[in-house]
Image 1 (cartoon, rainbow, N blue to C red):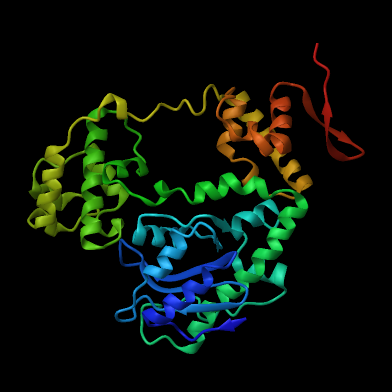
Image 2: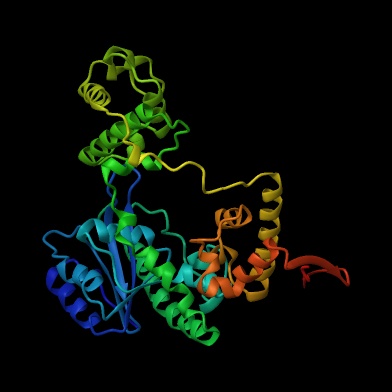
Length: 390
């Protein structure tokens, strides 16, 4: 494989992207910093196929990233391969308003191949390529310039290994017939709604036990205010105000800006500064949450009492057994919440009762809940037996 020098000019980048636009797939990775900012600070992009790879410096003066972004989000003939690509995809979405398509995530594929629940990249490389990664530059400051050779080699290594992993994983998926199992997971990963934050929806990410319309209305208003403040200042949300403080203010709103000095989690200076004034304005303009926006009651667990909880535990045991037998990560087959819903009597809208999940696990899970399947000990080993109902 040909490894290019660090790309810092538009002409070289355009030429690379033109060649890669004819590839069947490209491996993609990014390096970024986000500890002190709202938006991830993109510091490096690595991309390659089976024949060439390069690192691109997005901070290089005058570089035009358009050919790269067009390849990633507008060229639907080239498959984009990531490993645990959620944050990489978020960065691309921030820059374009779109997500890469089509895409493939090797961490998700590893679950279908029985390689682990959330297998790390280095472990995957060791397992399938029998190579050990150099982790020395893993915690480097990617924003600092100039980047040294070790940093660049480390970064490019991520995509060169990824380009080697993908064909091997694809072949295994074809051999096992599990490629179609991943379609829904890849579609979910690429859903643009995962990477867009509407300030008016930000409140839904904050835990709040109250169902009072007045309290939830304040929560919505303050969460939207914080989101806008964080974006405007390019600071992490928690640097503006932590979730616990936000929820506490929504439940117990201060009567005046002066009293903000007494709120745990806020600086005493908020009693007289501009940000405190804007917070008080948001609280003052808050309205009761409309009935059609009220969060649903805990219908997600209909009737799950003590007996239902025991049934859910049996389902989790069955899942472990089926996961081990099929050599598929349990997390890919079913989530605990779905098992609890099934145990509580829900049948509609459960992914474990559809498609391949039903064939691999859902049919037996339903039989267990409805009394057609039971656990037994045979020869000192746990086994499943069919029961005859009257």
